[in-house]
Amino acid sequence: MSTQTVTVSGMTCGHCATSVREEVGALPGVRTVEVDLATGLVTIDSDSQVDASAIIDAVAEAGYAVAS
Image 1 (tube, rainbow, N blue to C red):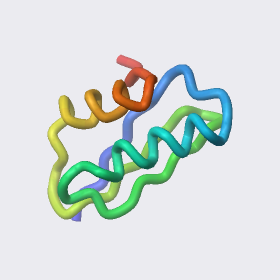
Image 2 (cartoon, rainbow, N blue to C red):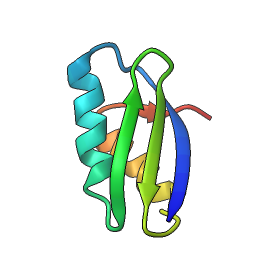
Image 3 (cartoon, helix red, strand yellow):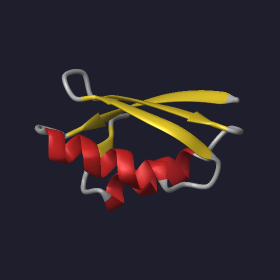
Image 4 (cartoon, one colour):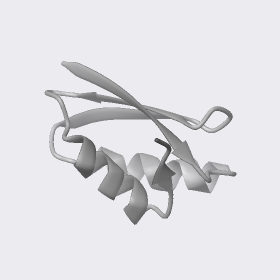
């Protein structure tokens, strides 16, 4: 199992967090996604390392951006 954490900017409400959770959670191999709305931290547990560009694309699909 692999755990990755990214910081997402622009989330302001529970709906924002749900959108990010659903998009990232749909990536192949992802088991769980936890979103901390207060800090913007998104923790992804997966079977193996998820490609960073796939995470960035999923977050963008939800309407947000991964902070660099």
